[in-house]
Length: 117
Image (cartoon, rainbow, N blue to C red):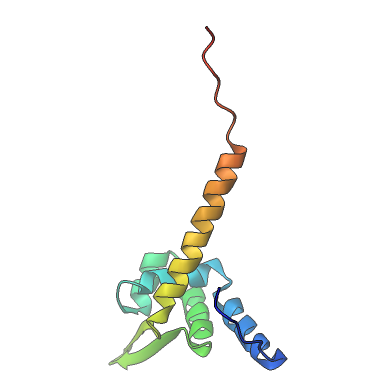
């Protein structure tokens, strides 16, 4: 395992803030929709099934935390992912969740019956 540098309390708080910004399923849904392409707020409302107010609130939090970009195109606001490293982070976490789910399913699965004979 690679050597890890110990972080200061202030840096740990900043990392925690970043994870808190992602710690809401609705925000993760919006990020998921942005993985393939940039979208307008209206497209994100349609794609997510969330209300306009909810989408706007969550996009504001993601933008403030630096996870998404926004730019104006006339009267429309277009959002996109701010950093390509987001893909790697999400892939790492999704792989971890799949592994945990598979392990839990293995533990929870009833034992297979052996044929009588």
